[in-house]
Image 1 (tube, rainbow, N blue to C red):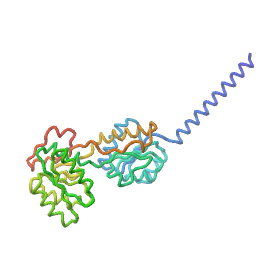
Image 2 (spheres, helix red, strand yellow; image 1 turned 120 degrees about the horizontal axis):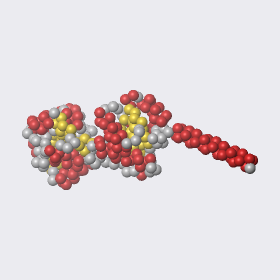
Image 3 (tube, helix red, strand yellow; image 1 turned 45 degrees about the horizontal axis):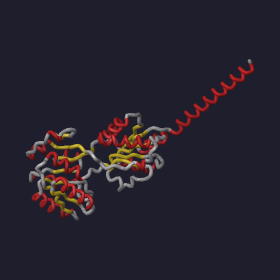
Image 4 (cartoon, rainbow, N blue to C red; image 1 turned 180 degrees about the vertical axis):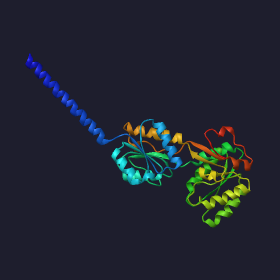
Length: 309
């Protein structure tokens, strides 16, 4: 009987040792492989910080938060040490850096303009574009200036696709979108002067050939002189005097980014999660400009709006 008990004790001891060893190995494997989620933003620009906060709120689990403000090498060293299972890039610089320098880690980007132009695609990449569709901008204009039925917009030689989308959106909304194509900088002034006389509002999109500081100042001066509201492509231009702009709804962006991260963590490949166009925006409006134009902003349009005073 004693020999049987001793044999049982030995087997129990061996089992305990084996369990302990497996536990240590498992813990070592977890430590070596890392895990979790890391966020890298392009800078500490206000909108990137806000987008980071929106993602963290929607994801509701611990994340490693880094910024390229401290330097790319330092951020990459911390990322490699943590070995995240998914990385979130906020802004173009962070997205392209992670694409090139962490080629095996699934990547979810947001706040990135024209992601297809920057080759942000592949088997491990998905995300949300920061480009605002023309329809959303026109809907926003219509919500605060429902009387406007003719909108003049200038585009350069590389914006044919955008122009077609803008015209189609205008047709759906009952707005005549009058597009003036500018081939050279010398054509800008006469085109603007023609548009401002035949339109009830002007629209400056994020056109790489048109959207220069000098062009904005000239278009703004003509719009103010003729009492026309100016729909601009960035909130910063509203602070400089434009009537309004559409900005990404960061809560929506954060929630969609968190959804993509959770799907990857549950086993889906990033490439099987469709990249999304922006679907929801918020209003940024200049109250001084609205007053100068004699316009009242409808209360229904002000929910979640940023008002520049």
